Image (cartoon, rainbow, N blue to C red; front, side, top):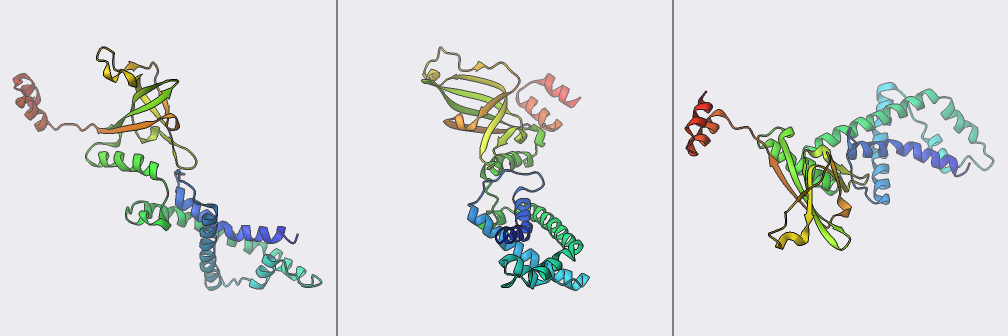
Length: 274
């Protein structure tokens, strides 16, 4: 009991900080992130917990008239109940006698920690300069580059997200030969990350492959189609990776007419006018 009860008390008191950290890093969508060192995460979680409890205790006192028995909390943390255990009963009574308030306090604090974490996640993620700060960073380099970077830039250039895609090429060793695999990535939803936020695999369509050594042979067909609807390319099996992002943007009628006129196609120009 000397070690179990203080450890349980610390875990309960630290829970709001770790809840905030997880909500802040991953948001509502559970985005993949690279974990920090264990000591860093513990330190940040405890620091946030202390801040949240300070605010919550002050709010409980001034808004609801509820005061926290800090002496009982200190005894639970230190497991010091007197030389003969004379303070054990008062300490247990301080908690058990107000278990409804204790339960309500931690329910509200945990819910607030989660909500504040999600809100902070959204605010910081929208601020490119702020999220580059070490303390506020999400450590999601691959996810940010591939799903929020180029895809978003192409879409913001004028194409709907559904019309933004990428051509992925990778060199994969197989036995004594290296093969070039190529396929179409139809959107960021077809990029998979592992639980540590590292790039895991691509789900491609219209996949094809060829030997890398065939580059210097003009008589060889460059790529051979891989039969199937979807092709999974695992990142850790590749030597090199190349991604070319493309966007399909519809031409306006005036642009279509101008392009037809430049080509000297009067029929096409007439159709564009119609």
